[in-house]
Length: 118
Length: 108
Image 1 (cartoon, each protein chain N blue to C red):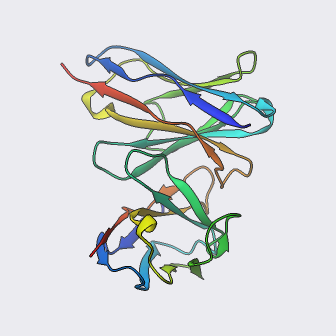
Image 2: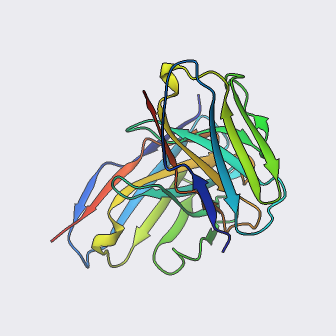
């Protein structure tokens, strides 16, 4: 059974760093893209970017380029999303999804709620 | 970036109604459009890809059409379980994908 299990909710202060995870199971991890989507509280979906674990080369939406870092660890079948210095505007739910075709997600994680507040 | 203008932003309909949502791209995107359903507290769920192709397992009351800049999503006969927010997403230029603002569908 394909599963994407994301790390738990986080509460951080502005300026802190953070790394959240998306652990895949039930399929060949290096063979499928993993994309990330943000949803701010009460708002719509924002496409962040996508990474292929096979080459670990992330592709970012311009809105998120330089703001976050995507990475993959094939040893742990896990993709990460990382911030060096959080801002309040980074608060939201972050979803990962598997993409068998780069434009089409099929399985989703449950989401990770990130709250950045002083 | 390609902007997606989705309308209406909210919609109230009754069981059995035909529901239509539109999405307009700021430039031509061929048929490179997805439609998603998102229920409260849940991840989005892909319903339609390539503007008009129904994902396997999605009820046939859902449909999509359009190409170029103008797209339509239709629920032919609204069911109570269809209450959700619906989003379009263009994928014409990898990786510069963008979502529409969403349509909140409520039961009348």
